[in-house]
Structure formats: structure tokens, C-alpha cells
Image 1: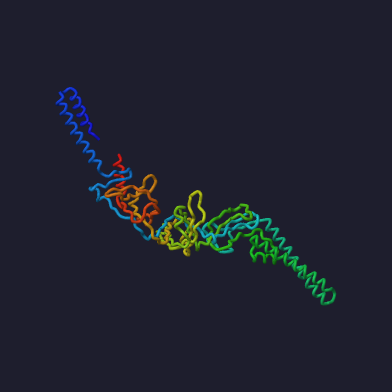
Image 2: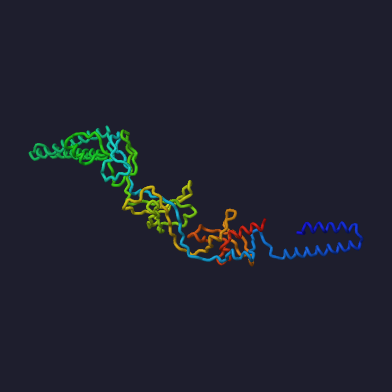
Length: 399
């Protein structure tokens, strides 16, 4: 560009030329030509350097010490994936216990957090159906006793040749039916929650039980209670949940973009902040086959032993999953520039000239490098340190 002051002088010289003698005008014209020629020479000198694109930037000699260059190299990476998770009961060791008969809860005997043994009563239930079932049992038992005695008498009469064997067979058939009915009535009482001792006492004494207990079907810890005294319970309603916490699940949610790096059998380190950052070694047992549409994550699970019951349900943990090592082209994290929501690096274009190049990179590994997925061949010379400042220099050159 010609300086504005110089342009003004030229215009003034031309104006003088119009009114001065011809000889002096020639002198002004010659002088102006000499000056213009010198300016043109300066412009040609300035434009003789390399032409830079909007993505190019030149590193000045005085700035060389601020940048480090290198080449894209191949490294053996063992990808570590970190996700948050929670402790959950092992669903295979969880039992949901409910009433076996319609009735009203008369007493609640267990609370959340209580450790219970198999067969221990958790609540008591009064039910008209229970009363009817006990009466039916007593009738079936009486019929069985009567049929048993009838067979004994028939055997005596057959020996005395008073009755025929056909009559004995008929009474034996009635005995078998009565025995089956008595057993069925007893099984019905057992399903309603009566123990074998209670059924034997009922058979012996004939005294009806006004209520029956809702008992634990396995040993463990009560982790949920959904019943209150006076509540009407129906069969199928889960009133208590008992879990054996000697073995628990560690469940995490991993983003769908990272799920391809995780598979069953991989080693995982579980860190429990609530237990002074205790670290537990385990393996991934399950990686989900579906993606949650709400969180866009995949569920993964590990199974660990918990003999001391230190790991509590809903306790937060951190999971570090160690992947298999593989040879991959990598670039340092400091070499990456984020521009227009894409990853870029500065690639050598000429001596001291670098161009901003878009590349496809994977997530950071070990907080030091990023694997190259595309757009950057191995051996390419790039800026590995100072790329952020170099990009700022490029933007200032465009202003």
C-alpha cells in the first residue's frame, strides 16, 4: 500500500506541474517517477515471501524457543476407562417376601437393616381364609382317620370270612383318597405360612390358630419394608425384601462412545471413597447390549465378595477399567487445538510455516496422549508443544 502522505505529495507535485514552467514540471515528474519506482520496488520485495493461507502461520525466529516440533509416533496403549458406579445387592441373592393369603397385618416384627435367618417371622397376619383352611384340614384329617380304622376292621372281617376282599379293596381305596386329601390340606396350610410344628399341633389338639406368620425365606438383611400394622395384605404384594450382602454388584454407566473399549473379562479397579479410598481388584462380568435412551449409556457390572458387609447398597464408587494394549498412532494432548468443535494440529507446510489441519482423535489415554483415528499419517511432522499459542498467533495475523 502507498502511504497516504506520499500520495498527497504526489498530488501536490502534479498541481504545481500544471502552473509551473515546462522545465520544472519535467523535474517534478521525474522525481515522482523515481519515488513511485522505489515504492513499487519495496512492494515487490515485501510480496516476494511465501504466500500464507488463512490456516497457515509462520513462526518468527525470535519465537522459535516457544514451540517444540516432533513426528506422529506409534505407541502401545493400554486404554483406561473411568466411570462412576454404585454398590447394589446381587439380584440373585435377593428375595421379595409377601403374604400367601389375604388378611390383615396384626404385628410387624422386622425393620429395615435387621439381619434375619431363614424361617424367622417378619410379621403376623390374621385371615378368615386361614381359619377356613384349618377347618378343612381338620375335616380331611378326621376322614383319613376314619378311613384308616375302616380298613383295619375290614382286614379283621376278611380274615373271619365275614366280608369279601372286594369290600376290603373299596375301603383301602377310600383310605388312599382320604390320605391324599389330608396331605393336600396340610400343604395348603404350609403355603399360608403355618410351620410343620403348628400343623402337627393342629392335628393333635384341634385348636385353630388365629394368625399366621410371614417368614423369611432366606437369611440376610432386610433392605426394604412395605407393610404397616393394620394394613390389608394380598397375595403377590412384596412386603419385605431380604438380601444376602455377602456378595454384591458394582454397577456403572459408560457413555456409548466409550462402550466399544469395554468387554467382559477386563480387569477393573474399584475405588470406594467412603472407605478411605479402598481399592478392590475385580473383573467386568457383564456389559449391556442395549443403550439407555435417556442417558445414552451402557450398563456394566462386576461381582465382588463382601464377607465383612463393609460395602453397602447405594454406596458410590469409581471404576477404572484396564483395556488390552495395542499399537496406535498417537499425538500429545498439548498438540491438539480445538477449533469449530473439531480437533486440529499444526502440520509442517514449509520451513517455519505450519498449517492448521483437522484430524480425528480418540479420547485421552493416561492423561498424556490421544490416539489418532484418521487424518494424520504416522511420521507427519507437527507442533507437539505450544500449539495453543501458535493458533493465537495465526488469528492475530489475520486481523
